[in-house]
Image (cartoon, rainbow, N blue to C red; front, side, top):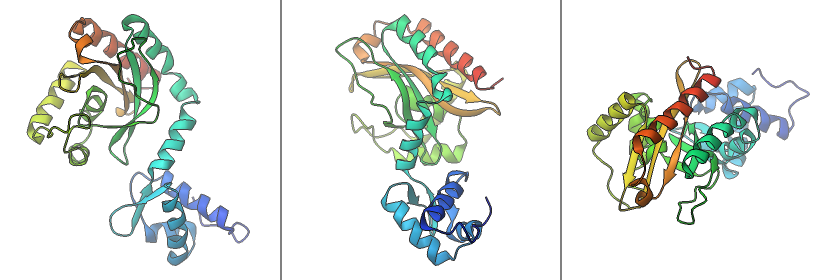
Length: 256
């Protein structure tokens, strides 16, 4: 995006310019780069950024850098839920739900914050269930939906996600040692899906990564349920169904 023109320097236009630069960036944006990209003085950019930070659309990174905020991701997820992209997921969730009558979930990968975001789900008809609300943020180091994504990330991203979740979100249990987690991720890649079961939290699930063209992981799809019911399931058949859904969905998004 080029610098703003003389006729396009209202505060609204400048805020939009900043959001576009930050939203199109692959990572954190330095203040000086935002100033150069918009053609505004660094002091003006800094003042506008504080408005975006207060609204949650932008958040501070290291030093004087900035990145997309969680509110911006929430709004984006809301828009995506009505788009063709997420609409493509629904038939696969419906098929899993019909076969197993358990909560079927698609999570999108939020690379900036090393989290998974619940983008679409079909709740189990059972009264005993864990309700995952849309746009809920999930750790990548706990649960099948998060670990299915984590298994295919670069080492730096794995370490960053690990650092964010030192304890289990449901039980408060300490995270496994990083070397232990890496071994679990290797098994997930070898098996093709993540299987998670916590009797203490009474939560379990099976999930597999979803890719787009270029072999980039964009999220995960899977089934979640109480551990009590998971113990009675045919895990091998469930895993096969989940992996088939992930593979076919990935092909829809251009993954070979």
